[in-house]
Structure formats: C-alpha cells, structure tokens
Amino acid sequence: MKKLLLLLGCLFFGLVLQAKTVTLYHTGDTHGFFYPQNGTGGAAALAAVLAREKAPYLLLDSGDFAEGTVETQRSQGLKAVQLMNFLHYDAATVGNHEFAFQDSGFDALLHAADFAVLAANLKDAQTGQYPPDVLPYKMFTVNDVKVAVIGLAHQNPTRKTRKYILSAPFAALKKALAEAEKKHPQVVVVLAHDSLAEDRPGHPFYMGNIGRKLAGRVHVVLGGHAHQILQNEHRGGVLFAESGSNFQNVTKVTVETDDKTGRVVKARSEQIPLDISQTGENARVKKYAETLREKDADEVVGRTSAALYKRSWVPGQMDSPADNWVADATCRYAPADVCIHNTGGARTGLPKGNITRRDIFDLYPFDNTVVTAQVSGAFLKKLVAGGLVPRNRLAYAGLSVAYCKTKSGKIKNLQIWVRGERLQEDKQYTVAVNSYVAGRGREGKLFNTLPKGALRSAGAKTVRQVLEDDLKNGVLVPPATGRITEK
View 1 (cartoon, rainbow, N blue to C red):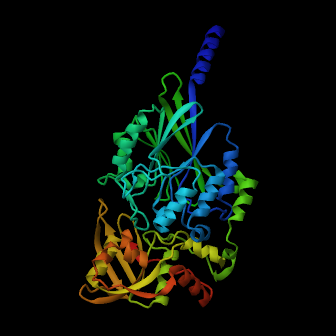
View 2: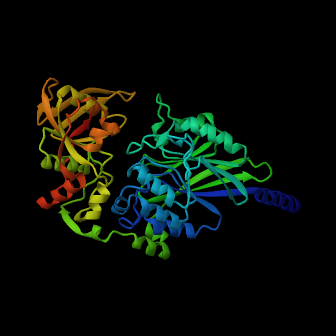
View 3: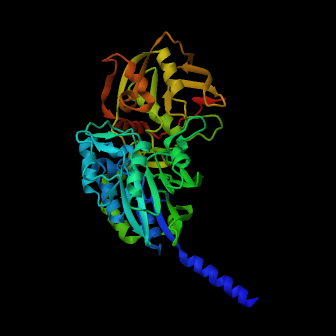
C-alpha cells in the first residue's frame, strides 16, 4: 500500500512539473484615478499587489487611461502614460477616450508610451498601415510559455479622428490571430476596449463571437469600456474578465499549460480589490504619483448636505441624484423647458461635506459646453425613447418619464411630462444640452437631424465650470430621484 501511495505521489509530482503557469494582471478604464478614494484604489495600491507576486507576469490594460481626472485633463493624458511607464505596464490597447485630445494628443500618447500599444483594427488613414507606434499584437515569453497578446481598439472614439481608421474589431482579430499563430503561441490573449455585457440574447456582439467562433484559438479575453466587474465567465471555453474602473480593482488571471503538449489546461481569474487596509501602498510609486498631482485641484469650492450618488436606491427609479444635479445646474445656467445630460458624462458622484475642484473634475472631466435649440415634442419623444435602451443614458431637468419594458427590452407605455404637463408632439420646446450629446455623442444622434444653425451656444463656460459656479449658490442638497420611472 505504501509503495502504491509513493508511486501515485511521484506521478502527481511529475504532472505538477509538467504544468507551467502564465500569470496576467489586468486593469481597464483607469481614467487617471492615480490616488485612493475613501481608502481604496490608486496606483500605489496596485504596485503593492504586484510587488508580492513571486511568478513572472504581464501587466495589461484595456484602455481609457488618458481622460477622467484633473491630472489627465490638463496634461492631455500624458501623466497617465508616465505613470503606466513607471508601473512597467507591458501592453495596453486603445480606448475611446485616448482620442479625447484629438489626433495630435493621441500621437503624443503613442510616442510617450514605453509599453506596447496594441490595436489590430487601427490603421493610418493615408497609408493603410499600422502607425509606427502601434502593433496588432505582440509576442511575450512568460515563465517559458509563449504568449500572444492581441489588441482591439474601441471603434467609436470620443473625438472623431481624421488621421486614423478604426475598422471592425472581429475581422481585424481574425487576421491578427492568423499572423500570430505562425509564431506558435501557447496562450492567446485578446485585450479589448469593449465589454461582454454588450453581447445579449437576440443582439450578438463581437466579444461573444470570440467565444462562439474562436474557442481553442483564443484562451483569454480581457475587456473594458462598460466599467463592469466580470470574473471567470467562460464562453466556449474562453475565459472573459473585466476589472471595473478608476483603479479600484485589479484582475489576476492564471493560465495553466501542459508542458509536453503546450496546450492550455485551465484558465481562471480573480478580482483583487485595491483596499489599502489589505494591500498597503508601494512607497516608491506613491511618491512618484504625488509628483503628478495638480495642487490647486484640492481647493474646496463648495459643500453638500449629503452624498450625491450615481444611482437611485428606490426600486424602479432609473435616474440618480448626481445626474439630476448636472441637469439642474445646466438649467440654472441656460434656462430652458428641458435640460438634457448624458449619464455617461457624470463619471462619479459627490461625497458629503466639503467639495474640492478635484471632486468636480472627477465627476465631470470633459470640456463640453452648453448649447440650446428649439425642437418639437415629437423630437423629444423620440430622443427620450432612444435614451432608455439598452440602459438609461440620459438625465433631465424639466422633464419626467414613465415607461414599461417588454421581455425583449423594447419600450412600451411611454409617458412624458414637460414642466408638469403632458408632452405635446406638435409643440415647440427649448432644450439645453451639452455639446457632446448635441454634436457627436451616441446618445444624441437625433440632434444631427436638426437644420443647420439650429444649435446655439449658451456661453463659453464648460459644464464643469457651470457645476463649480452652481456650488456657490449655497450648500447643495441632493436632488430627489423619480424623474425616470420604470413600472
């Protein structure tokens, strides 16, 4: 019996020796949040986690690092790249916000990056080739295992690009994968600035197609863009993971391969919250991050009586206090029948008590201004209906909505009131809206149907300046929710 146990032990030990593990660390949608918030997150906490890792690893990012805070806004994203260089990222792909500072700003980010910028679907518009600082994929060796990392940029940049073409991601992936396979990788990782959340029943998305059509060739997909946390989701044997946003978490992925065959045996992911009480902070990275801090951003500019959250805690109410405040402040700046704000524009809420300029930047980092227009009730109805699917994407002041959804996600029984009266489709209404929604935002494509000259500037102030001025009116009380109700 002892001999049998010894033999089995030797066999098990042999199997362990034959298995090699690839370790990956992943972030996404960090948006320039270099510093902790309420004891969690930040670059120094991430560095503390990495410092404890004994195995070789790759540090990867799914994009949207260049815009989101005062540090990134004022440096046009360069401080984010400098910090990523300091953290020794191995590769990142291109999010929509990497184009926030136009083509010249994007070029500067590429030139500054010491890590590989991977985007198989990004080409130079004139040459049709990859830009000098962009690769479709890169081969790495991790723990003696060959790993191919393929990047997929987001197809709809925050600002339109004239210098580059962003093609369909899935077709670009297949082409890059075929090229990478000629170098015989044992593990293939896709680094994408898109989310598996977009792949829904009846509405297939290319992220889901990776699992359905490329299983066995692709092993891990690391996504982003939706700011969701996704762990250990498998589609067709492909592991999908997403790491949330704002440097609040890091994902650790381990991929086991068979040393004899080179095949992937198992892949799993683990979410690691960057809770400083658990992770600590790396002193060297913390000191460097402090050199990037914009000092005047921590000046107090107002107060709140309570926290403004980015969600309602009342079932069925789809609006939030933070979004409602942005819409209300817009109306106080540019009086109108209806003021419209995109919920994706407000990135965070506000804490209770003293509010700093940094808090306002964190909530609304963009340089959008306010425009006004005269629109029909029919236009408003169509805009509101479109803003409710696939999720609530618009917030309003002066307008309230009630609706139901069918099982397939379609809107029914839509009811709209403007200033307490039922919407009249043949009536003209004055609307105020931020320039992103009115000009190039997905949420406001309907504004492109208005006649030329219909949109008028309400002034030179950015929405962020409007919000800071609004705090001067006294202590801010969180607006009530209930403007958008799903029954």
